[in-house]
Image (cartoon, rainbow, N blue to C red; front, side, top):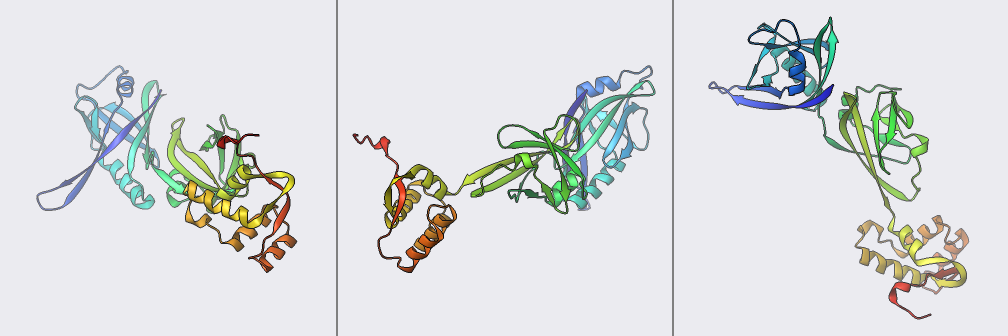
Length: 311
């Protein structure tokens, strides 16, 4: 059994002007019912929080004690002081706020125990720098996953450009590792064309009760590549280079593309050479006399059938 509850952070200003912060959660009913399955249940049950490791606790029901909290309003409860103290330390260290708890029921010495994993920054979306081969990880992501150099992470693809990344070895498509502040993208997912600009976002999630990353990648093609694909094709004809440049600038205005793609004529010629539309020698000939007509052979303009032309 596994479920999740949210943490509500309350700031209260006391009469003396000092601010106090409480952390409140709604205990899932299925977790509460499971904890009640014991021979002797106190008339007024309290939640006992026993620390296992960082932000990970074993929670049981029992009598009132110094390090426990009363369940009020059916299944609501405040987190006890020793848990709050650790949360505040980790919030300051990570720059993230505690906002969720993953609950799992286990049996310990014959009675049910709820394992509570407190998550900081759960569901937060973090834009990241991405290249063809790697992702630059932010401090928040490294903290959330407790990443160290050479940590192995396992990738499971969901959708065309999305992946769940975890430390778990169960059900994965590829794996990679951390190198300094970057995460290597597995080779099988390094399939994006060189001339495509990438943006990426990582959401802090959970899988199987443990922290996980949801990576979504968006590929944005350079408008020049789109223009060339839809405008010219190899053939027996010839294309005048200034005419091609004029069509490209008109294409950009129609697409309302980012101004960074509005190349000068010289830049446009350089880009054509990198894409093997013209040779290096042709580029040099054009740029030596940029105002004179120049035809590139072996290309034709594609027929624009959508205009309704006959023939």
